[in-house]
Amino acid sequence: MLDFKRHLKVTGAVFVAAVLAWLGAEFIQANRHLVLYEITLVFLLLSYFVVVLRGAWRDVALVGASLAFGLVGVEIVLWRLNNSPTTFREKGMWGIKGELGLSPIRPGVIHEKKVAANGDVIFDVAYTIEPDLSRKVVSPQTAPLIAFFGDSFTYGAGVNDSDTLPQIFADFTKGVYHIVNLGVSGYGPQQMLRALETDLYPVLSQNPRLFVILSAPWHAFRTSCKADNAWFGPSYALENGVPVYKGSCASRQSTFRQGLTTLLRWTEAYDHFIGRREKPVEPTDMDLYIAILAKSAELARQKYGVSTLVLYLPDDLSTPRYQLGPGVTNTSMMSRLRDNGLEVMDLTIDLNAYAGKQLIIPGDGHPTGLLNRIWGERLRDFVAAKFGASNAAAETR
Image 1 (cartoon, rainbow, N blue to C red):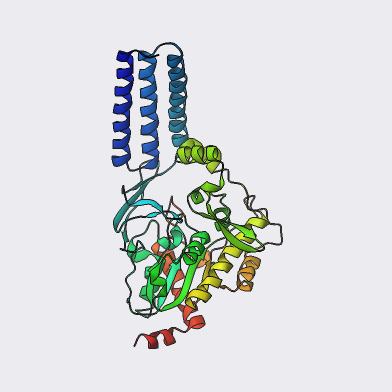
Image 2 (cartoon, rainbow, N blue to C red; image 1 turned 90 degrees about the vertical axis):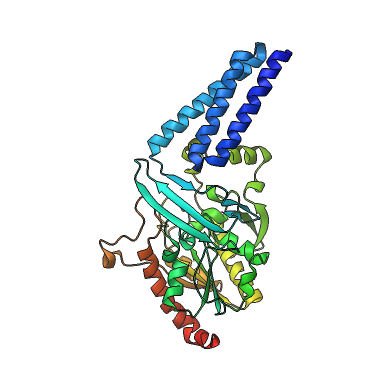
């Protein structure tokens, strides 16, 4: 038993640590910095307990302090070893959005800065979030609607509002369409399907013309819950060939694993030893990915009377990440999508035609404004040929 004096010291130390932890969560932006700060607080608190406690309690505190110290060391070593960049994002702008997962949760301007391990700035941009929590696109509100779904490529990670693909498409079509950008970093087809199932976006019923989603085979890691960034998002399972909602990816795990993963998923140790060692995509995972897109297209037709266009970004399907068999190619994947009622536009470009041009943000991997312009111009021509821009223009007059 603790005597009153020691009990008072322990209670006071816990209170001080809790206040410092809260202050850190409020004012430290980067996940990596915040994790290191909080683990260091735990180490200091347990070290204090080693000094003030006696007997078995002291032994427990000593073991805990040793583990915390070791984790601090591992975090620092892995941070330097991996040369991991750090992303600084405004506090309070992102959180869990219903069943969809992490998302902007309030309107306004989000300043985001990504810094390489050597201190070089990879990008420093601003994202404008509209009152409906979509990313800003300037276009006529009364024109026929084209809604863009997808991940960070659609959202426009690393570029300002004027350089996102939806905004560039709006510029190229010169006011023919009302464009909304419903893409969010870390999302995939499963978020599109859940949004359509739950009628999450009222804007979709306002004179809809076409739904567009930028997708790639690696989205199958997200739809199968194998990707770390799918943890808080919706999950589906195939039942008689139909994707059925099963809650979040996290909720499908055991209570112990769910709690442990949620606690540790921001650490460098988790990312290095678990997050980067995702299980490969297998045929059943790809079947689910295709089925989710097909179901989304079906709901788009039934509820809104529109087609769904997949902007297909090819990947190297021969890598160990994919265990799909030699017969599965990007061409066969696009054929499967078309066979399931989706329109498909191949985003492949001839790199030789743009030699020396910066198409990808260095040190990041997301498209630059230039690549979005290349895609946006091709998308304008594809939509005009397939869906009749001239007809849409007549509807606006």
